[in-house]
Image (tube, rainbow, N blue to C red; front, side, top):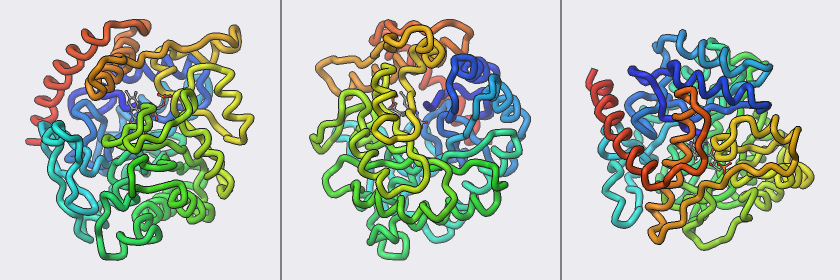
Amino acid sequence: MEENMADEGQVPGSTILRLYQRWAEGGTGLLITGNVMVDGRAMTGPGGIVLEKDSDIAPFEAWAKVAKKNDTQVWMQINHPGRQVYAAMGGDVLSPSDVSLDLGKHSHLFGKPRAMTHQDIEQLIQRFVDTALKAEQAGFDGVQIHAAHGYLISQFLSPLTNKRDDEFGGSIENRMRLLITVIKAVRAQVSPRFAVAVKMNSADFQRGGFDADDAKTVILAMNGLAVDLVELSGGSYESPAMQGTTADGRTLQREAYFLDFAKEIAQVATMPIMTTGGVRRLAVAENVLAQGIDIVGMGTALAMNPALPNDWKENDQLSAHDPVVQWKNKTLSAIATMAVIKRQLQRMGAGKPPKPNASPLFSLIRDRLRVKKLTKRYQDYLAK
Ligand SMILES: Cc1cc2nc3c(=O)[nH]c(=O)nc-3n(C[C@H](O)[C@H](O)[C@H](O)COP(=O)(O)O)c2cc1C
């Protein structure tokens, strides 16, 4: 989960370290960080972390070290947001094509994307390699390339956002060319024992979008590329399936949202498959494994209780608090839910225990004020 807790200079600091120590002590086997940006000029949020070729490695070494306590594995998720950049933040808004985000009356909150040139694409691939190399140097055990949730690589995969007529657009073979090239380039530069994983949508859950057949084709192409793990998720800002809601009206499982899709896609996969979304109870996690999925991912549940895996050893009936806000306005409810979850991360970063039943309204107001402050700080960073 994106922590949005960077110190000044968009680097990890003591607050994020306290959070990861908490998780490492809680019994989690593998920690995958929130997305770290490969380019400081394109951020998913103003409190995000940036790791570039010339970044100072020391804060990242400290982060990896604390997360690896208790023999926990730690992989860094690496990402470029593409068109999912808030207009208020500024920076570069790139995408395969100049298709703007459609969020109805909220669309204006996002920047207008520019279609990437070949040179932009080459530079982007190099940025993923540079960030992965720095992550390895800093002591992380692997990277996870973010190709899900409507961010840049996911925009290339989806026919709704990729209208290109060159070798990066059109057929699924062309739309997945960027992802495949990034994987090959990263794998060629990092050491063989460093894990290279991918997070990908099982589907976009939008009519005419990337679908399960496309996902299978991508998996088949990745089978031969020494990819260590594929995490299956779904959706984008336009269709937030990763929060359990879809734009095309398809229903997901109430718990373990993507299990059916993951089972189907896993049939063609030779690498281990993980699925994340909606898991709060041990019985559900065990059911996911019993259905042939190799790893169960959890986000929200570990924000509500960072020691849930250890606690399950004592009490297998224990369920993590479900923070989903159900106000009349769906968009506001989704933002308020995120605010409640983010607040738990911040509390742990401040050395406090989570407060799962925190007021959604208060959390939302607090989050908006915090984002405003961080946006100002990020603009100063951009101007340097
Ligand atoms: C506060 C928050 C931040 C998130 N940031 C990321 C992220 O940086 N990268 C990512 O792949 N998914 C991110 N997600 C999505 C989660 O990884 C996960 O796919 C989703 O929350 C569903 O799983 P869950 O029900 O266990 O939380 C985030 C979710 C939340 C709640």
